[in-house]
Image 1 (cartoon, rainbow, N blue to C red):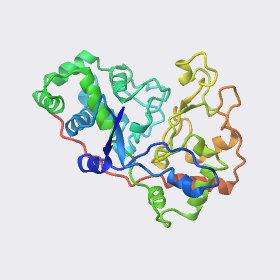
Image 2: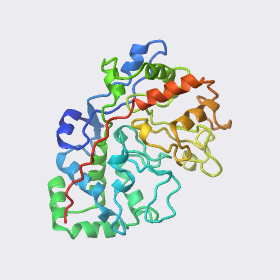
Image 3: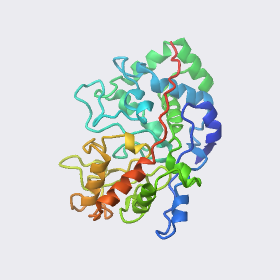
Length: 342
């Protein structure tokens, strides 16, 4: 069961409180008005009944998110890889944790993360609550054992007080850390972009080229077959014909599935123009390169999505698609980092 919390309320409480997305049913391709409506954002964020929203819990989660005490060296926080100034990602081809050799995949953006469970490039996390201790305990990432984290936070009276406000008593436990971080992270929503103003009726908000690109996005280019709804992701896992060798994505979790071999999570396209490089491994440098990759159709193999095939886009159509994708970027906002308990 999910509880829906109004974004009007959250906007008054959180540094990033703006409306966000829920995947809408796909409209008939000849009904542009219906298609446009399917991208309109709802006015609330869903929270699970097992972890309902509270202002105190979200405030605790925000502190934990920005606190380098969650890493072994006390130098890295969740925000290191999910930087609000970088559209809640890090701008790197592959994430770098406490191991300078880095991780095999890039850090995904957290924009609209409340709407796209399961999580992770391969979907190994069933919900946000189950994510937190993965990177925290990973030696290559934040490198902090669970008992050490709990001891660190429990030794700080100010943190115990914040836990008490959020949960009724000051006990610091793994489930509470997970619940608080997940509550804050669900509040990380897409800011209003020119596309959203166009959807609301401002016909001057995007260019004629972008409007052509929108029709291509939902038509000839077939982008909307996976990048649908206000978050521009249907949450599915697809082989787009690029992953190589042993980089098999969701196939690791379903080794007998031919279709899930090389399949990775469909990412949101919100803020996509400033989130280069692209793909799960950061292997594609620019949006132009992304369009060209899809235009060629990728490696033909049993796992490749049926939507991935040569598109025969003209140079003008490619430019129109880029123009449209650029309208999905909201205005940059300065991050508001909370005062950390010490």
